[in-house]
Every structure is written in C-alpha cells, then in structure tokens.
Length: 396
Image 1 (cartoon, rainbow, N blue to C red):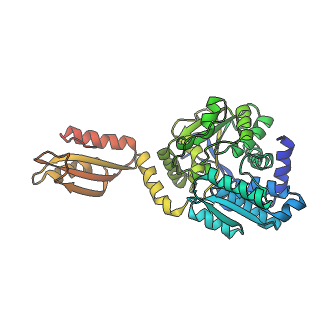
Image 2 (cartoon, helix red, strand yellow):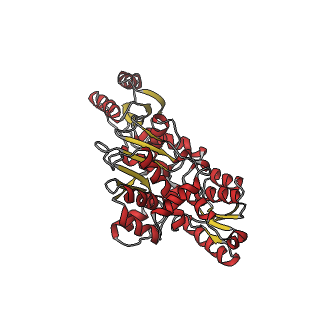
Image 3 (cartoon, helix red, strand yellow):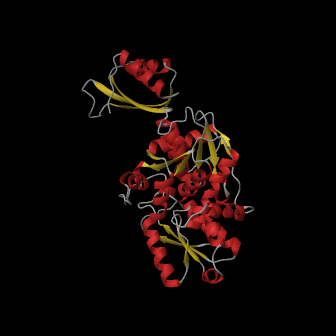
C-alpha cells in the first residue's frame, strides 16, 4: 500500500544519496516548458531513488542473502550502487541486447551481471527463478511500493521547485516512475495534470490504460530501451488508472528529434526513454501553450555508438537534413543547372551521387541523389517547390 508518508520518508532517506536534480526552463524547445533533469542524477537516471529506498528497507536476514534485480540498465545501476553503499551483494539479470555502456557501468558499481537472451521480460523471469532458487530478495524495477515511493520523491521536488506547475509529463515503461510522481502530485496538488508518454513501438501501459485491463503487447525495437516493457505491473496499472490524466505515444523519429533538441537547446544528453516527454511536447501530443509544463527527462545513459545515428534521425525529422532524388536529362550541363537551383535556395550539399543505370530513370535521363543540410521542414518544401518550378520531378 502506497502512502504519502512513504514518499516523504523516502525523500528524507535519499538526502546525501541521490541528488536533488535541477528543474530548468527550456524556452528554445517549447513555450512554458521546464526540464526536470534526472539524466543528471547519480548513475545517470532516476532509478537510484527507488532502488536505494527498497534496499535500505531489507531485513538483516534478507540483506545477508543478497538482492537480485532485472533491468535493461538504469535500475541495474541503481541497485548496484545502492547495494554497494549498504554493503549488500547484488546480482542483476539484464537482457542480452542491453547497451554495452549500461552493462559495463553496472559491473563497475560492483554488481554480478547475468546476461539473459531476449528482452526485459525474459530477464525478469530468470531473476525470479534465481531468487526462488538462491533465496535472494527480488527488487522489482517498478511493481513495488517501496520502489514507487522512492521515485515519488521526484514529484515532491517538482512541487517544491515549481509550485505553479500546471502539468507534469513523465515517461512510462512498467509504470513505477509515473505512479510515484502522480501519487505525490495528486495528493498535494490535485489540479495539476499528470501525463504519461510511451514509445509507440512498445506501448504496453497505453494499451492497458485504454483497454481498462492489463495488456501484453508484441515485442518491437525501440530506441527507448529504458521503457521497453511488454507488460506493465498490476500495482502500477491501478495507480495509473487512478492518478494519471492521460497517456500519449511518440514515434522513434520524434524521440530522436527530441534528443537532438535537448542537446542543442539545453546542452544536455538524454537517452531515448528520457526524451519521450520532450518529444510529446515538441510534436503536439501535449499542449503547453497555456500551461507550465515540467518534463521529466528520466535518464541520460545513451550508448555513444548509437548517438550519431540518433542525431541523423533527429536532423531528418526536424528538417535539418534532407535526401532528395531528382530526374535530370542525361546531357552536358544538366547536373550544373540542378545544383544552381539548389544553391539559390540556400541549402548546403552534404553528398551527391549520379546514377545513369537506375531502373527508375528513363532512357535519356539519370537520377541524382542529393543529401542536403537545410534549415527546417519549411525550407525542404521550398527546395522541392523550386525544383518543380524548373521542371524537375522526384523519385522515391
């Protein structure tokens, strides 16, 4: 049973363990938008709060046997660091496809890592099996009142830092983060809206919330690995039904664009899960025009090897990078005339290729493939219109 007293107690226990993360305005990203930067938390994500609150409450007998958890990475690091601080053995089951940076960081905090083939749900099953077999205490990443209470301390901080807040936007995976934040905020300021955001590719809480019952969704790839959960918790589902006002979804391209916007506008790095809230505001899923809106950026543990691909996708989604393929006559000077039109629009050519043998080209034509640096989506439309006005046609 979750109570407001549990959340206050967790907040007190976390002093000196977890950081009180900043809540700062983000005018370059959106009107009335504020960023609650849990990506600047120790371990790079909010999960430390719930993990420490859970482990500190273990009995001496439970602590002696050790703690086990399952995680795609952030809960793993929170458990590992918390256990190390309290002198308790920790074993973490992680999906085999978890980012290498998160696996290595978890080991670095002192945990024993068990890589499990499959996704989070497979890791959860293995962790439950080992807990039963070895007598470890299972620290659930979201479906546990003590974990939820720890995450709820973020809600208390938001109300302290921005008392006039009108709505809070929170990422959802299994639902532990939004359950704690929503409970705290609705208990103290019922008029404040709480909105959840999921990756559309794996929207298990959205589907469950819409259907009015727990739903397991099909697995799919998502850059938001931190919220890659196929079935929400039963406890978190009920809390969401009671305290969450709305749940929306965002696409992979929208998430990438939000990561880029946070890098440029806030000079901060967010992982896919953390950027979902900003994506929802950027692309009109959440209206911030008249409401002071706090977006919880839940983590910043993005794998550096994927960051360049994320940036590219973000540039494309925001209209800062465009690929255009145009038919031109296979005659001397044709390519030069095409490039002059592009130059007059103010676009910068990143790369160009010229293919006579493309099957989409007519006998007397060739296809020119252009990659362009552009200002925004409107600029891309202007470039295409300028080319059409000169008689050029496009291919897919």
